[in-house]
Length: 400
Ligand code: SAH
Image (cartoon, rainbow, N blue to C red):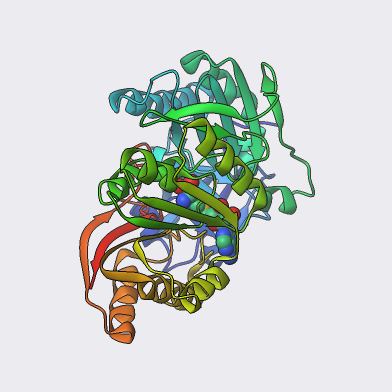
């Protein structure tokens, strides 16, 4: 199958061209009037607007929630191996510029739309590379993409993970596996801020570690000294261990719904000699309610829940969930306590999140001072023409 030259033309509905002219990369079914040329999944198509004018070039996916992912607004650009190599090169260069190349550490090398490579996420964990594919187009081009990544990064092993949504829509045509080198025999150990973390590359969540929170973990730790800290949604203990070891917290309690994550968090605590940390399995809402009933109080509460809004239609429900979660968190804080509250839902804007906290302040009658409004670490850049890449909010607040 030809994966380089345009195999069809996708015509945008009359009034729907604007976002694509403005270089937003996602074309959904609702924006499409008709398709000419019968392109197959993964083939290159031209997106055509008013007056037959070609707007951009992208890759077609007939069953995807995003029907066309756009990659170039230079309408003569061939989406060939050298094009992909160039994009990957630019992405890798950014991480070098950021100084995220220390061999014992981890970073995100490629962040999908934010790096002009919609559907492709690549993380480096020490000398392992994990490629996460989220579109048919990227899955079909894996040989080209992984060859380019291999040449630039020279990893000991490359693993691939298929996003669950893609796997479902493609009837398990694509599977997780090892592209080159050896499969790790257990969690591999990376360093972050001098702490050690075991990362489960094949079974862990996402690609294994929440690298986007790297700088926010340090930021939170700066407020932790002497405090009793509650880390809800602790996963493998990122925030908890930063607060315990670097922030010199008095005591840290971490909870997560996943027992796999908690087991790894406990191992991580041991590996770092953190004696003042305890991890347990627990549902966040239930645990917060129980702690409150038991009259527990904390000097710091960290809330880093999973994505609550998967699309525009679930934003209202998500905001209600953020509200009750943050309300429970605030109620556990002693006066002058610190709330570190996060949202990784791209559809919930910073303003929505701010307004949610306004609601919490009203209902709890507590005073909430925002000290820092943070985002993702810079190896997760925000592309201004794709607002959804500005997905992570991490607000650090003082609460009276
Ligand atoms: N703070 C972590 C990342 C958290 S990701 C870090 O820095 O590494 C979100 C976590 O929420 C996941 O580990 C997931 O297992 C957990 N989770 C999801 N739903 C939950 C629930 N209802 N109660 C508790 N934990 C939950």
